[in-house]
Image (cartoon, rainbow, N blue to C red; front, side):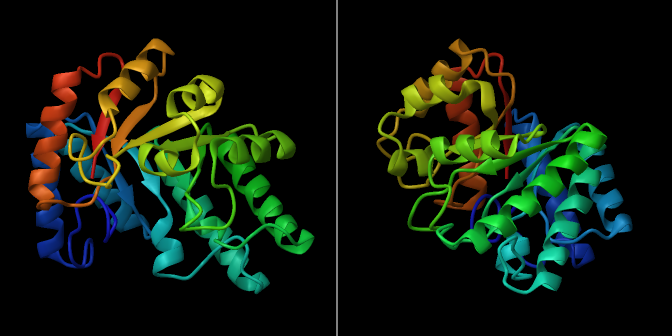
Length: 274
């Protein structure tokens, strides 16, 4: 649940009222036939995380993935921060979330927490390399999974395409890290979304859907249903998670996405929202 995408809740997890709203959102997902929920977290308070986990379990949903974007957006932490102390904080925050995610077999997403600068300087590239290797090692030890997101060039200067991320994973010999592909970013960066899915299916750890305008599927010019059919034909077993703008309203976005997914029949893939 980011503040900009998905299902925004003001002051989420900071007040009793926001927790009640969170539980209502979980109920809305369940009512619209979603299987799980993806959260965006920037804290590692054990009592709070336990409360979140209990709410998800009681809803009948599963925790599909944990985004780390708010570590960058709110805490201003990244793997390529020139300040070594802040890099240590960024890595520890991700490691804490990996430990939590392992309890639910959820994926931890590495998006802008890696930093948004270009990797043209060896010093910057080495910083990122060390942080990724350290987080990958922690995930491997607890049986967890990480997913590096390919994010378009207008939001970050590095790791924009599936090929960029795959090359990084291979170069560092990461063992518990795969790729997160997002239809919105792929529509900008990839020559063919279908061909990219086929080429990198063995490394695909998590999949985000949104239409070309980042509204719910069916609102733009992408044939998201055809892409999901391609994923099924490639025997993809991971989560399909809706990461859209809350348009026309946040509730409408959930309902519209649920209706769309039922119409195209996700079949073997699992769906999550928020």
